[in-house]
Image (cartoon, rainbow, N blue to C red):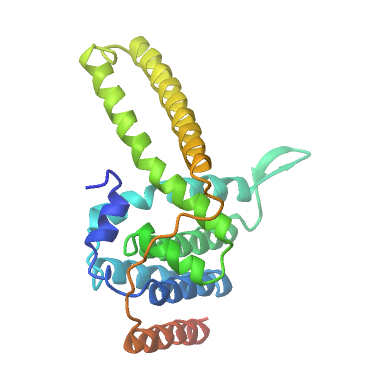
Length: 245
């Protein structure tokens, strides 16, 4: 277990051994379709397909997928409220087309989020980064993402260790102590992350590292059947949406 439920789900997914490029094509296509087609029925179809693939063939735990979608859902809800409220001479009020505008925004956002989460819960970052490099993403961007990904688990371990020590000392026994302990926890983790980053930079510079940390990536074969099914599925969503619209 890595400490991140999404990452654990990706390593345990039935699609773990599929080529990252195949999954990028599928999920990227779903995102594009969700943004281009009308919210009804395009976004609804995209969301249903993404969730169905995640819980079905990919065998992602339903609880993990549901927990992962909570944070995007919160941001979408806040964005929907700000999009439908108008401030006029008479004060704040609802926009005339508030329901349609909110429904369209929520539909597009949730469908796109479901497609992105399908990729996140089926593709480990260690597989995704080499695929992005091969796709032409600048090496500096990929390298920064790789370093942040590696440091993330170190910081999570530090966060867990410090919080357990605080809890053992009754640091969260009252509301006042909880506020104080949370502030101390944030400060300690910030200092540790700064120190870890500084030590890593000095270590890499001392070794004369001027390019990325190259490793031998695992080569996963592409599936022609999967690519054909992806193309047919995306075309089916577009066709169904145009007919129903």
